[in-house]
Image 1 (cartoon, rainbow, N blue to C red):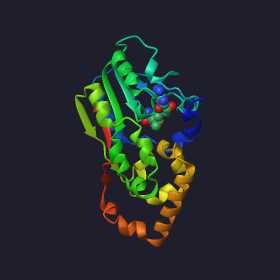
Image 2: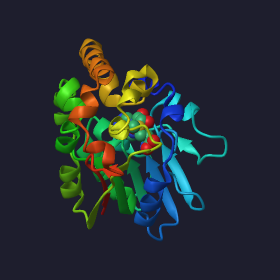
Image 3: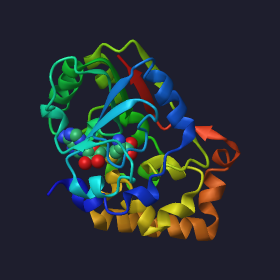
Length: 243
Ligand SMILES: C[S@@+](CC[C@H](N)C(=O)[O-])C[C@H]1O[C@@H](n2cnc3c(N)ncnc32)[C@H](O)[C@@H]1O
């Protein structure tokens, strides 16, 4: 049983592909005809009209793949069951921070493909998110233990690093997706789709959510964050790394 067999239940419902991230992911793949999607989950950012194979360790995540999705191999990034240079490109979207040995996983991406496209996030910027700073600061130590986008870019010797801001009405329920819709965090279904919350002490999350509920009811959240409500998008630290 993998961690995502537990925390991935309901993933496909809360984490829906957003075209505003799919478009830059597709252009980052360039002319690659064959793509290995590592840590593919439900395959949210798999490119249509290319030869795609997915790698995913969690049976629960594999179960939620759409009918007709790319064929999937049950394996981990750290030991890819493919020969050297077997693919034009590898893709790893919001998964590297879950790999027990992320350097070994990235070395595997490099071994099996000429081009690597990794969507990761800057953990320091994630920790600056109001939800972490003001309500559940316990998330910060988990984030500090995870590899950050600049480290990943450096390890891969990246050719480019593109910031991917989070639109205010983003459909892929990543942890900071609701930065301008704070009421969403009161919904346990929304919180379940965020590994950072699913992996933080439930008592700490419950305390923070209780405070957030009070601040929403009293109007304090809106008074303190009036400037956010004007913004169409916000940089939560997501970076599209191409090597
Ligand atoms: C947040 S999900 C992202 C899924 C998908 N790439 C997406 O963007 O929707 C993280 C995925 O990484 C997978 N994962 C965890 N450890 C892994 C490892 N060592 N190797 C490959 N994938 C792993 C999890 O099972 C999960 O499906």
